[in-house]
Length: 84
Image (cartoon, rainbow, N blue to C red; front, side, top):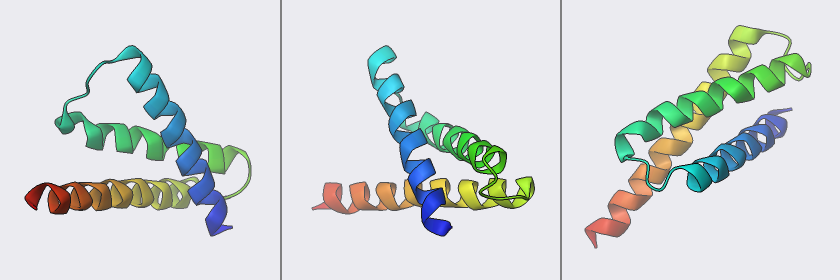
């Protein structure tokens, strides 16, 4: 069941990322955490309404933690690459 969350989050992030790239030329880095929260909320709602997770609060927390964690890992990778 946990892999289903990851797949849903990845798909939502990919779709929103593609939409952002098409309609907005450059998104400042300060708005990326807001985008991650939006991805987490949409993913949680999808998981809740498709009965993957019966508890809405648990779905929200799980998806928000996953998206914010992924964003943190991506920022850490960029920091390491840019420091070399």
